[in-house]
Image: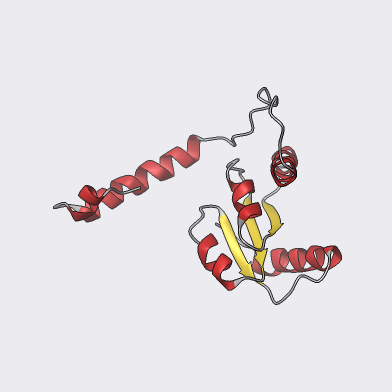
Length: 135
C-alpha cells in the first residue's frame, strides 16, 4: 500500500512501479496460506466451508473457485488463504461487485438472481466455461 509520502513525493510513478514489482515477485513465491498444523481453533461455518474449498481446489489443482456472495464476505474469506485458483464471485449486488474488483485474485460477476443451489451451480459452470475468468 502506498503511503501519503510516496504518493506525493517527487517520484510517484517510480514508487508505484517498484511497489508493483515487489507485489508480483511476492505473489510468485508465496504459496497458499493453508496451515494444516494450526487447526486447533474453531472455525465458523463460512470460514470452514471456504477453507475446505481452498484445500480441495489446491489438491485438485483447480484453476477456478466459484463463490456465491451477497456482501463479499465469502469471496474475501476464500481469498485470505491465497489460493492458486482464480476466484469467480457471483453476486446480485452491484456495490459488492464493484468492491470485489479491488480484491486481487477475485473476478466479480454480477448476475440477476441466484434462485437456488442448482441455479448457482448452473450459473457458475456456464460463466466459468463461457468467460474463462482470469485475475
